[in-house]
Length: 78
Image (cartoon, rainbow, N blue to C red):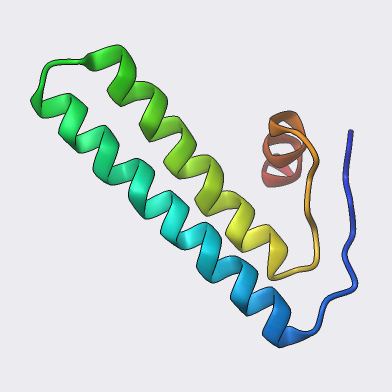
């Protein structure tokens, strides 16, 4: 499944999750901009990546860092 468990301190997890939050926020802003510009495929792509990065920020707080998109999806299902 491509999972990678990380031994990080609480501060390291928080710092990494903050970076992922910023990335998620940036992707969401891009999605909204593209939606307003009627670039629907690009908006959908940026929306997907916004959710992907948000999911990764939640997982890193548990010390889980999936290597691939499928890993993120699989973990969130369970």
